[in-house]
Image 1 (spheres, rainbow, N blue to C red):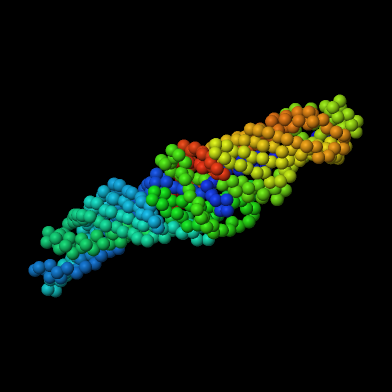
Image 2 (tube, one colour):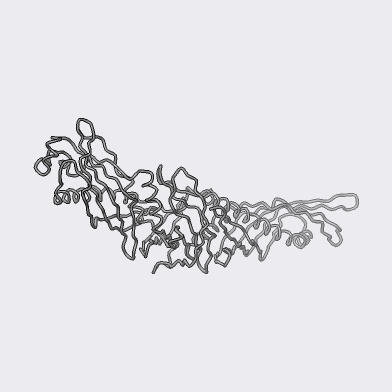
Length: 489
């Protein structure tokens, strides 16, 4: 009777990570994400749209003034309940400088309402009146300059300049005496202008503070399972170029129960080269071979690269009766007993990424066991070196792939049932690898592995380029909402 066997999830997972590679120097392994000009325009449109929605209704502090009116004398005037109700964005731009990003927006119209009142003394009598007014602003320019720094593995956003400039201001008063109109407009126009400009500037600064908090709260690791997590701490300050911003992430794997630690990496002579034909894409993510090497060593050290197999496509091979004529001693010692295969990696799997090609290699020990009266008895061990080649694809926000068997070789390490014929071993290994190992690996590769994408965003129209020791994923991005508090609230 065959014993229950566990599947082989971690072996294919390691092969999946073959497809996680990037542009980095060998001494500085990391994941690099580059947001192009089209990507910056996309983010800018999101932020400007969000700002236009959250800026209204905007309450402006009351304004009190004493104005001298000919014949009347000194009149105490108050503009109260000033509220900005709506803005329309006519145009917006984003530009990258040496130290940060500048976002500018032109507002085609801004609508406000307010209440007004006045009082003055005429001999012993106090005369007062009140009413309401509407304010139409035809044209307003708003701009903010922001920089970003790496602070202990997180992004710190800071504002270097924020401006709001109002163009023309038209106040329409309802009610009151006609003599009051011009005096009010003359006395309050500049104060209303500056108060509204300050209120909008403060609101934008408040939004920038929330954006800073959001960036600072981004996770420092992405858990894969109970064993491994990707360290996604930032390792350097963002690099601002003429039309893009680059973010360098640690990208190496750590035990999932450990805290991600920021490691400052000095990148000397490392130049990021965008893939051909991708200049219009919003986002480029590149991952280095060392990403794979780190998780390979992690799983190997954890002892996770070994599994017992009791089911194969040709199940008859896992019973000693099938070997009675080919390996007589096996059948003589263990007649009609079920067999188990213990597959274990003898060293961390390795990966090579070259131009247009991805290869992975793993060395395995395949121990043949017999289930004899519920006791597992090892009878032979075969050392197998397996090489596969594959391709990577993007599925959703996951990097997925598939592999094919390229080559395998084997040697008999030891046997308790006599010599095993090479032809027999080769045939069995061929069946085992092609019909069990490769399909099982591909079933996990098909599920994919999460790319470091902020929740609430989705990759679209992606393509993949393999280069020397790296893979570059070039894609557009869509905002799907629901998981990004700053943009969804």
